[in-house]
Image 1 (cartoon, rainbow, N blue to C red):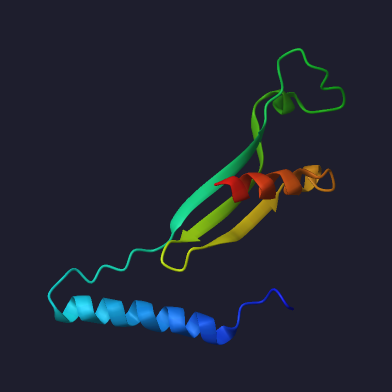
Image 2: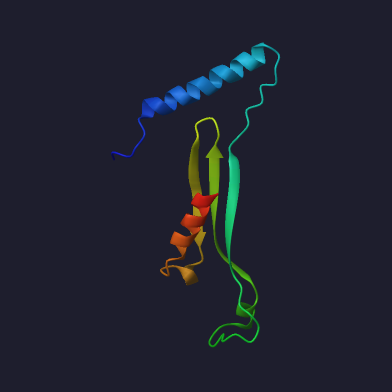
Length: 107
């Protein structure tokens, strides 16, 4: 709970952004309100042909997307948000979400 941002801080940030947007609109400037920058991290399982795929389907030898993460960066507020993280049921419980999270934070 100590790590939570104060809600009033968020209101100030949004209020400042809306005032800036209104001023630009009134002055005839572009009132464009750019959204966040977004990155996506995709985790791919890529097995080599001939690799031991015992007990797996034939399709398991092809590259397969097994997870991913979506990250938003809000420039004005200087904050990042890990919006989504997903991992195939088959690969859960192996510590892969931690790898996705670490890679997402590098973006």
